[in-house]
Image 1 (cartoon, rainbow, N blue to C red):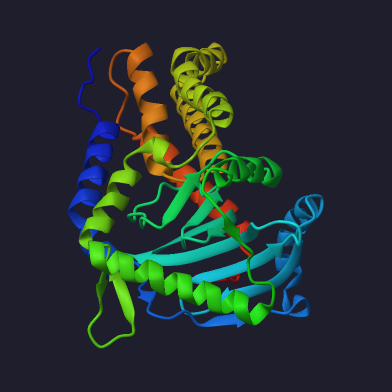
Image 2: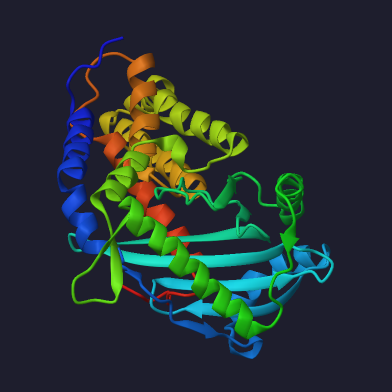
Length: 356
């Protein structure tokens, strides 16, 4: 297999090199600081927006079937946009949280939006260890404290299945402690756990104090882990059932466009006495745009990497010759990023849709 120099490869190498060279200063500037103490605000049910209530409704229904009821919803106002709903079952020692996190970062004048919703089950034990089972999609870049037993299940979205996995591990860990049931104690527990976690991150170099501020900054070690995860397409928690059909279709479209669709369109126009190049280029652009749209809509994260890899490597494997002066894979990657941003913006319930 041979990869001749072309525009797409040059664009990919340029962007990759720029990311590696500028990642650290950009992350130092744009990554939000972690407050020493959370500013936690209890949000009454009547204060939730219609979009927020609608977002939590499916979780309320699924957890109600497990006899878990919402006790409170709280907002952490000094650390990005975080809204967490706390659930309890009187007959259980484990508590459940559904946490929505949204963040808009501006890097080099361009704003990128990211958002996530994670289901957590927590159980505290008499030895002060905490078992957490969650479905966070992104790979964690911070060190886990020795008191925190963490089970990551990024491909499980069903609370009942997540709870079964949690219970199986909890049975091996000793005597559980009943969780707090009143709102004040719940919020104090959240604050206490945050401070304990922060103290550990300070001790291992994950956080560093910010002079003159009541906050911590992520260390360079943690930033480089984030960069590593960015270039690891499989650190994003994409399920195999979703990944392979989308990847195959997105990879096949550019290949068939070059081998079949574009030549056929060009031939059809030539039979009419018209120049066929216009039709061929239009078909190529359309197929790459559709491929990029599929990648952005279904993958959502690391769209530049996936858009470039899936629309470039298969074309080089199955076609030969010059790919032309237009960076079609870069076009697909750009479309994937725009589609992913649009989808995440439409889903946002904490950051206004009209935010720049």
